[in-house]
Amino acid sequence: MEVPVGPGPRQAGGGLGATRSTSSGRAARTAEMPWARFSAWLECVCVVTFDLELGQALELVYPSDFRLTDKEKSSICYLAFPDSHSGCLGDTQFSFRMRQCGGQRSLWQVDDRSYNNKAPLALQREPAHYLGYVYFRQVKDSSVKRGYFQKSLVLVSRLPFVRLFQSLLSLIAPEYFEKLAPCLEAVCNEIDQWPAPVPGQTLNLPIMGVVIQVRIPSRVDKLESSPPKQCDQENLLPAPVVLTSVHELDLFRCFRPVLAHVQTLWELVLLGEPLVVLAPSPDVSSELVLALTSCLQPLKFCCDFRPYFTIHDSEFKELTTRTQAPPNVVLGVTNPFFIKTLQHWPHVLRIGEPKMSGDLPKQVKLKKPSRLKTLDTKPGLYTSYTAHLHRDKALLKRLLKGVQKKRPWDVQSALLRRHLLELTQSFIIPLEHYMASLMPLQKNITPWKSPPQICPFRQDDFLRSLEHAGPQLTCILKGDWLGLYRRFFKSPHFDGWYRQRHKEMAQKLEALHLEAICEANIEAWMKDKSEVEVVDLVLKLREKLVRAQGHQLPVKEVTLQRAQLYIDTVIGSLPKDLQAVLCPP
Image (tube, rainbow, N blue to C red):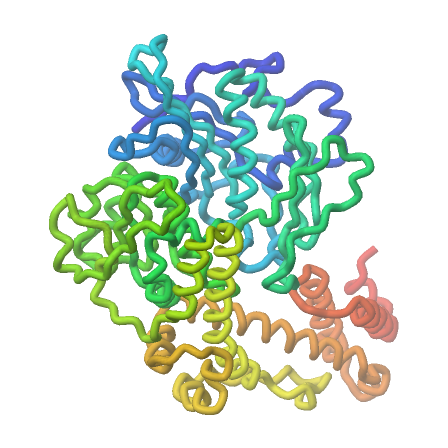
């Protein structure tokens, strides 16, 4: 579908689509690219409206310099509106994830390395996908030919900060729907004044007369850290609205209809199994998919996931084909048509209409996939999978008691999150211990030889180690842990975890080798060495120094200084002609 960029107020002269060219704008940005701060948070802002002749149409992209391909424009248009089966009246917030089609988008492309090196793996910037955060409004309006006002405001980002962006939309969108373009321009200008998201820092983000205070998580944080303390508010008027997390969802609310199956779902997600979530609306679908993908923390979710997916998606054929096994993806859908299309998928979770009362909704039942035949299929988890671990009945009783006693939902969510975190940690700690045993001993790292290799991961050796160092040491749950590990070894999550750990260990090894060189007597080593060997040492040391300074190696600053001193000493010992080659003026 060719999606036109509507006329909209995008002409020069300060209109919404115009690039900023005022003298004050130029003066404020002499030191950095235009929109550099804005793009540290968002790629662009889109407005999608309903056109009687065209259907969903992209009315606006801001900043106008940002380039979306036709395929991406089409995807955003379809993903920004609930499916016609959802019948969402009023305001609805949801999110989606779509594949980026490649190519340079703007002159202000952000360098991800600095942020990604410090951010938790699960919160790193998406390298190949866009995340869309949607605020959709559908209200009766007799002045519109169709009888309804239908419009979506979409924040497109590569940061998985779902809580922050949803909070931002709840401030911006109602105002935008009332005042339109000028309001959005002012908002984007404000975001362009924000400091960049730096892991470990608490930031105050002013927007539309409100200050949102957030703490950007860091990979060195304890996993159950307390909410951020409010920082000095002397110059902050009004007092900030504190968001306790930029990304965590209300897990209890998301999992309420499926509490009885949370552990089975955790296993399916851990093993990277293809899973369809069929929900009544895109907000339920997207929140449940995001809750499922977050329940593996601190393990990074390494499979594909689509919080909201439609039949118009450019990847529809690729993801629904019957000619090959279903892909490793968690798919959130709302159109009952998917029941028929994805009948061959091994796991389908159907959620019914949400109940608004405080009581616990009727729990979905576990059913065989063969029952998944008609479009009016009842809510349930349709799978032939048998869980390896026994269900934690004590947790379920505790949560149900919490419902009876009207315990706050954030407390219920904290209980559920802690349970899933402890479950994942119990599973992953034996793998971490075994992996650490594959690291060469420090005493075997000598300065003038290549560092020793990391030992290979032998699955049978690891499984044998479980008898005395298995998850039973930290987890009371009984079950077939060995069977779960065997299946895990075939999953994308084992591959992702192993590659990441191996990379970190290789970098640590290289850092230790650099330290060993810096602690050695380099002058004594040079005495009987040829010029070729000395030059080779200079080149290798320089390469290590470049990698270390690019935050690729965990090296202390004092080691970096010593390495530079060594390079200077070694070069100084060489003839002048070689010095000129190695240190050109």
